Image 1 (cartoon, rainbow, N blue to C red):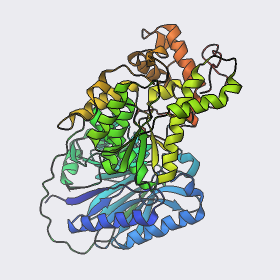
Image 2: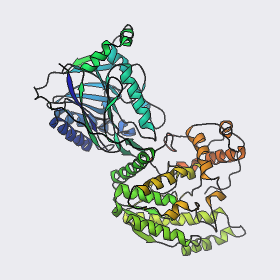
Image 3: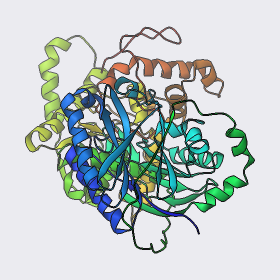
Image 4: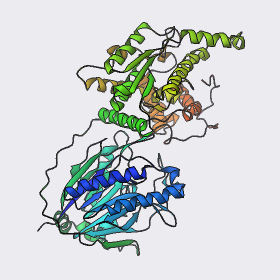
Length: 588
């Protein structure tokens, strides 16, 4: 007779620090799983405190309250078993998975591999675990580990399966999104399942937290590495799958690799095995017939990540409405569309702030966009304010020709107006700058950089156009005016200005920025790709000299493998250059 285990993965969106709210959400999902005759339900890494809790972990009261919240969840597990992520406080702090069974907290697993690269700082907070835990539930042996533990070949998965006899590995995770990560994640999990002839269940977090977005995509794979259950991306979900464990046993009998692996003895004292008491007898389960989940394309997954990250940042920080400048350009148009999709049209306000250098077409395009999106729209001309600024500064500027200073004054006036609206009405200002501009400093401190959240901060300009085209394709008619998609980009801060007056075409700039910023390639390697040396040198120099600007930028959604901010941390005071630096021309 086949051994059957009904497994559920509770893919939830939690909020860092909301211990009671997170616990309530977990308990609600436990109730749902119990109603579906689930035997074992797993929740994401650090689901109780939220991920990442950062220096909250250094507050003893927070740490204790997190334990009390887990105990409350444990009492809610009558008739079911749950694996829940929390911060365990003993002689040190551990990133942990609590094993909760039939109303009690029965055991704990401590995460062994603590990532300390990219956006991760786990060595700052946690002690590494030392034991490999397996538990037996209704005749099924389950190995549990946490996020990074499964990314490493070998232990703990090897010992849990080879010497612990685990037929199912449950990995609870909070793995942040970047474009393309779903495929690499699935390949890794498939390899672990196939290598050790085991079912693998991967419970991932979903939701936005500051600059990070967690995409969910929880999944279950069989002993052949095939996906047999997949949760929706960028949404909360409860994935329920029936596992037939005899398939694992049969596969292992025909796998000579296992016999060779088992010859190497386990490390003494590392493996710990427990048996959970038999629960009350349950009625026979009806077979499940899980539906299919569509696989998202590249543009759709990036767009949905931006929507989720923006919506969660605004809501979780208590804002009800956002405001942004609408220039009639592609960046502000895409940002406004994302904001509406994240928050609803009633929660978004657009403001056009034309100057004497703004074209009539730009104002028309801004108004057309606002009408298509159905958002509140204001026009605040800045001409008179700009004249007042120039008149006030005239004695100090006497004898000097106009330059980028006068251009930046216009951007700063606009920033002041938006912040004034924010102050008066409690609206959060969304900035509209993209990654290409941020990279080379083509942005103004306290001007277009002024705001609370930078929606497309990690989106290169060429990708901005792709996402705008994608958004226009999703409705019955385009919301971003076609003229916005077609006209040359311009800041419109001086007569007949174009971005290409100061920068290479974005089709050239973006690959150079990707090579230097995201891939850490040096000058010679980038030049060898076919780019002009002088151009590459100039772009690298701009990137290096504008770190001080980026450090003062608001947070924004991370969607690339390496974003400015947590991912890429360089000293502000820094004289290292790949070549002799140019004289700094402006600090705007």
